[in-house]
Amino acid sequence: MAGILLLCLFSCKKDPVLIIEETKVNFENPKVGNFSHYVLLQGQNIRDREDQYFEYVFDTLRIEIVAIDESGYLIEESLTEGSASLNGENYVSFPTKIVSYYLNISDEMISIKNLHPRIKSRLFFMPDEIEGLQIEKYEELEVEMESWKTSLPFQTKFQLAYLENFELFGKMYEHLNVVINNNPMKDQLSGYTHIYSMKDGLVRSSSYSAQTGKGYGWDLLPEE
Image (tube, rainbow, N blue to C red; front, side, top):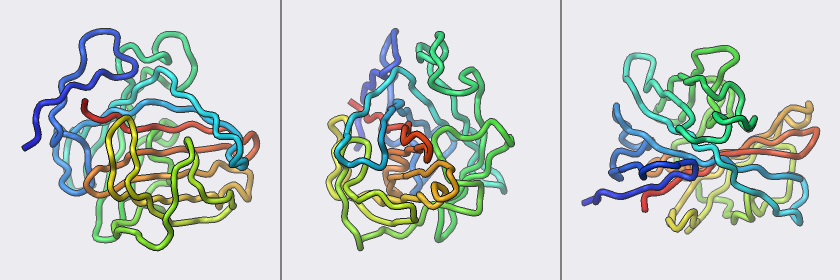
């Protein structure tokens, strides 16, 4: 039985947020009221495996399932009070906006549908509906995480892989799918990576520029 767990968010300046483990957003049994928090990361030189530098900055993103209807699970994203982008920094676009989109989970794929043409999910980087994250547990290409990058050599193509026993903020994730789509970088657009499981939901996502090699992403904050 999951206990009541305290999570002090990276951006919090007041009391910790009370979280019960089964209330976190997942892809296995999502429910209205489920919510999760993510901390923002920034990295550089996506093409260079020798450059492993990245840092966390003080923006924390909250996502919550607020409704379920025929279109899917309605998600709202917002920055938590105390986040740097709400206090003069410029890490996140439209920092005061609540971003809404639908999360759809079919027998084969997890996809999203943004409700605004410009103000889109900060957490999920794949295009609306036409691309998604596979449901099936992937077990053919094992990788490791080297800072914010995987151990795979950089390539401008689509790749599926998996992580075993990945530790993040003291929490161990036994098996995570890794979906990398760098195809857009052939056209000087951004590539992106999503790391997730059905049980744990989205654990890490990142997007990175073809022009500069710089990127940013979000890491799931665990219970404490």
